[in-house]
Length: 265
Image 1 (cartoon, rainbow, N blue to C red):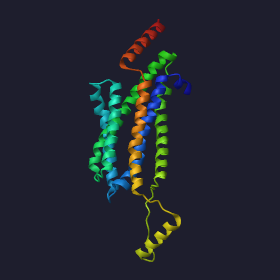
Image 2 (image 1 turned 180 degrees about the horizontal axis):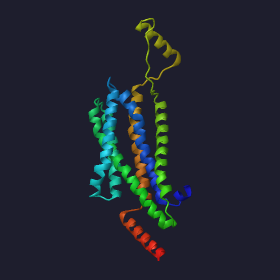
Image 3 (image 1 turned 60 degrees about the horizontal axis):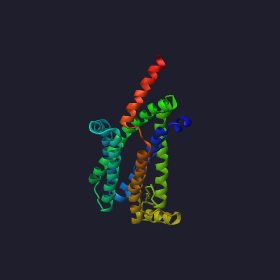
Image 4 (image 1 turned 90 degrees about the horizontal axis):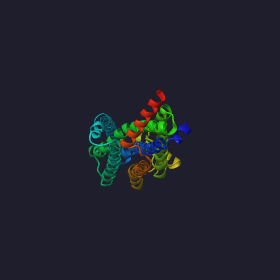
């Protein structure tokens, strides 16, 4: 499997690009619940979080079904890739600006969510197309087709990106001393005051995570700036390594037909 991948430099370029793009998105998705809980806050933060996720999921599906086919009428897949990545970067920039300026309603955040999740939906389609292109390229270069190996890498890289993003998110939460726990206290002998006193004593004995203003600011930057940096790296890898343009693919298709025709004769 690894031999087939390493011998196909275009498949390798796409695998690295996919890992980076997915890692950027997953970092944000892993930290988003903490943003709504500790930054946007409010009594209905869970409802706002659910609303944002539902909206983002819907936009992602629409991007795959509608936005991509529309863009494909005007641009080739390479240009659509760049448009999608810059759309996500722009969405992250708007998200950070809104968080730093103290926007406290979930609805304005749907705007950057539209651009980020729309880009994610389109990139999901492009990934499949680009991986399929590397199969034809590999047939010309290595004299064999490795569909099963290359397409199985799509699942592998998603899991790898999930692990990388989970690691980055856990490190960030540890550095900024942010906890996922929902601490509660119970009344003692029917007295809420006694229960609160007991709860505070337990905190004093066992320690507690305090989410300060610095922690919230750090969270904002990690869930926006770090993904942007990772997306820029993915963009540079893609631009430097992936060369299967529409013209190049036409040449490869012609070579494959010619080779198969010769073999049949």
